Length: 347
Image 1 (cartoon, rainbow, N blue to C red):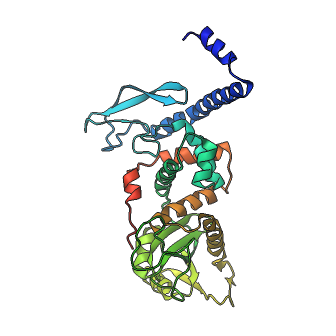
Image 2: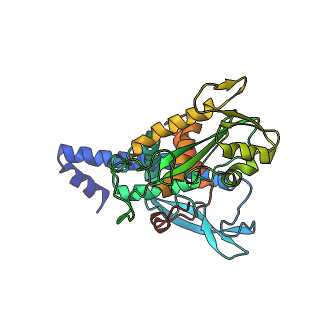
């Protein structure tokens, strides 16, 4: 069909149909125009020190032709590379959340919905032409990458405290050993038990933050050392609550240690307190409530999500959207639909 014939057919449409067609073209072109600079930035950031093989980390990499990617109504060329050592080929998005994504031009809208905290179903309605189940896997591929964002060491005063979430097998069928709980539910035991999962938060005054799931029940010394032992030195001062595992750990590491009892009679000793980490706990718990319970096997992902939001101060602008996509694409992941769906929690 020639362009003249196509225009003639468009003129036969009703006003409402012409308006829908106009919106379709505008959205398709806008998605392409907005997403291309993001892919370009991913390429530049990943290759700032030269080409590196994503399979074997070799620097003996050469360009190896082009491949086509469909972005909305357009097709664009992307670079392919080949490693001289392992002989494998790869692209700039291999082993990233964008790998094997059929609609990469939809990712800007998807990340915007993530920053807004919309549900998967609402996000699918807003984005259009993507199923909410697909968005579930997109979400966790991004969070698998963001979970790798890290820092080397804490500096100065380090506040550390644990909080607890109810163990959850949300989404699993045929749960054995207990009755099903609706929207999170509550533990059948009083206090801290094996039905609760311990999350450690450690944060210095420069806001370098560690957050991670340690296991079921009360925190123990060996878990602390495994989680943050390499990030602490004798130059750090530890501020914690009065739980004995913190005292034993601080003594074994030779750290200056300030303890604050949970009854709140003494909350501050000069510069030393745990109010920053307690405030982080409070905000994390409030943010988690919108999820109506999180499967424990994915809890580390949600901790990374909140940590990223805390870093960007919960802003949802173009710079933040681009930052979230680019940062997640700088880490190699092996998460696939099957590995995410079949993953389990190892306490």
